[in-house]
Amino acid sequence: MNNSHDETTFTAQLDDRRDAELLPVVDLDRDPQTVGRELDEVCREVGFFQIIGHGIDTQIADPAWDTARRFFDLSLAEKLTVERPSASYPYGYIPMGMEALSKSLGSRGPGDLKEIFNIGPVDEPTHELIEGESDAYSPNLWPEMLPELRETWTAYYRSMLGLSGRLLSLFARGLDLPPAFFDDKIQRSTSALRAINYTAPDGDPQPGQLRAGAHTDYGILTILRQEPSAGGLEVRDENAGEWVGIPSIDGAFVVNIGDLMARWTNDRWNSTLHRVVNPPVAERAGSRRQSMPFFFNADFGAVIECLPTCVEPGEQPRYEPVVAGPHLLSKFAKTVG
Picture 1 (cartoon, rainbow, N blue to C red):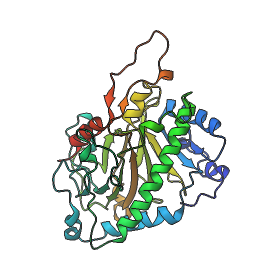
Picture 2: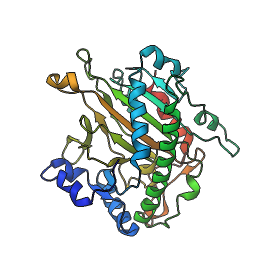
Picture 3: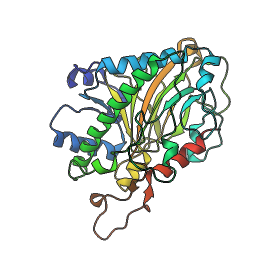
């Protein structure tokens, strides 16, 4: 993830594209107050953007990406050695078709055309766990035949935690809150890192079956590295009533707001529907796609309730407070079989 490109270079890649209007590129390496205001504007519109100036070194990002690819290249028997032991277990390998993201929104569609490897926190908790929190600290399942995956993913997970904290500080500025407002709510974040492999399909999908069904993310925010050459990720533009593709920009991460952040901001910010569509029939042979989303969550016991700057005098919040951890686990449970 080379971070040396300037904003003009990235913007030039998006000239004359409808996508650029929907998905701005935000350079984090500028005045924090300016960036915060820009993020507020972006998140009010669509809740998706790409970031440069993020400071994540290629020496951390690339090995994690490469070992994910090597994991998916293992035989199915080897990958199944780290299969999650039950449908409710949050980490490990999930074979093709065993997750259906659209179910999180009540759909009854078929399983998604993807296979997954998940991990959770890489450091042991040093605090007393509350009820249900031990599930989020379930042991990660590391493949013995690929020991370097644990090292590369641990480093990448920690770097994503740091970037997420930086984004939360910028979010606070955009919401007219002190820069450290969120700090005491994310110190024990039970976040998750996953790699997703969308293989070239062998045959026709079932009716309504996609690589990833339409869904919103559940937590605070998601930081995504996507395949540099394979498309398919789309965002719903509700104003235009259409789906818009998200271009892959060298060195950038895609960031989107999750349901809990939308709830926190009283829907001032949008948690936007997105999906990964199937490749055209003529392009199936070379259509393998990999992505690595980092799902950043608040502390398991953090209470998510309307922020003081997101409700007008005399108005009432749209949502009752919820506890972050149980909310996320209930969403996850709906998507896996």
